[in-house]
Length: 197
View 1 (cartoon, helix red, strand yellow):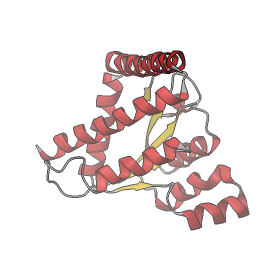
View 2 (view 1 turned 180 degrees about the vertical axis):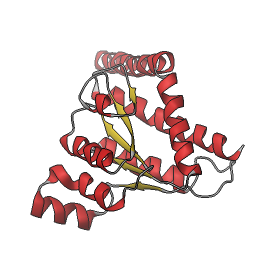
View 3 (view 1 turned 60 degrees about the horizontal axis):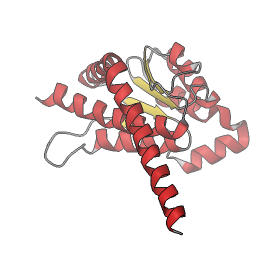
């Protein structure tokens, strides 16, 4: 038992150190793209535009989390008005109806067509960079003259389709997701400061 616990402790420490190393590399390699994304979101809010977000699985949860931070606030200590952001991952009636009737690959694109306006921002989140429904949403966003921000890992088609791509330098889905959450919080933090300080 003691030997087994030692192995688990070593495995846990290795996992956390690998996750921290990915975040260290984000801090080293992704600052310019993060700052550019924050500036673009800020410009959009100043122009009375909104942010739409889409992604699958853990990235869907990230969309909800990030939209909540914009509409509510990132921290209690920083009072400010709500900012218009919509996670396209939350309307279960629409998602199940459209997926059932038309297929899951278009569930985000359809909402972009309905809600997106020129000058709005679409944030597409995909750890692989190849999620078909996110790619289709980006195509719809382009057709609607929206700005595109992509959060991805180190590969995939999505980054090349975006105005700004924040590419986490990893191929490990879990570590990419962990880094994405930090990036998302940082984007909200920077936007708040750009707008209200």
